[in-house]
Length: 334
Image (cartoon, rainbow, N blue to C red; front, side, top):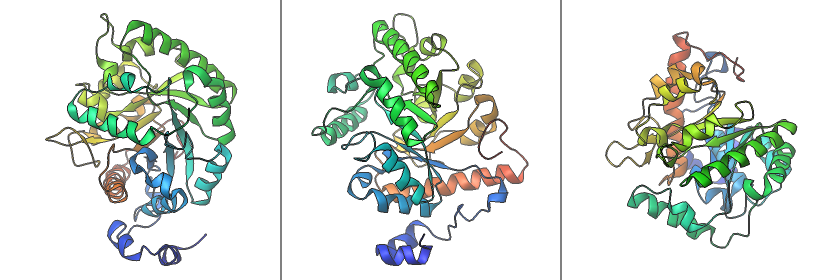
């Protein structure tokens, strides 16, 4: 593997990297002995970079210090135009681990997806995403292809298969989601993979007197269906993530570490907005968290934004380590 200097020269990005990655070593200037958990990245944050230059982009992400990755659907399908085995190999070659994959819960339609929008900004973001995906061929989803996706997760060697979103605006949709999740969870279990569900805001809106978030967790097998709690969307919905941990302790092995701008409440770099990450990380054990992934929807300067988020989290977690505050449980940094 090329060292840092050789990589920067060969990629022609020396000047840019001096701005993006000042004094960052393999773990952001922190030794592995400092007890810093591996900081992960949700690749959705990088936008088209994973389409135009996937290998080069992964190398740059590794240079920042990220060691765990979660993939997302793209214009080229669930794995950026690669087979699961091919993508896993490319991630491994970059010095990282492909830990989790986001896939759709149901066939994509603009009308369904717009139901998730709460603001004009949300609608604009969804329409922009839809425009990027308009030429994409049909992509496997959990409703129609849960067994195929569970098999692909196993082939890719990932630990988690995550439903990125699914319609939950009516009780019929919510009950269908429960059925899909239980089936997907069982298919994943047989393949040695854990299934999980990722929330947005809409899961906290009441539907016929029920919150989809509560109904789904109460009516799915707790061993087959876990949650990937998006800390920002839960916060934006008026929820306290720590209280949610208490309602279903141990059921949140995955987090999305996303912040919200103090004025616009749109996604922002970690540590710059309203989400109280220190308090949330102080309750990591209660949640059952094993991995977390930085995410920033619509990041204006993706590599700079994820570099800043990484540095904030590396500092936060290093302070926890020096204070003797650890993370117990079945996590990879024990």
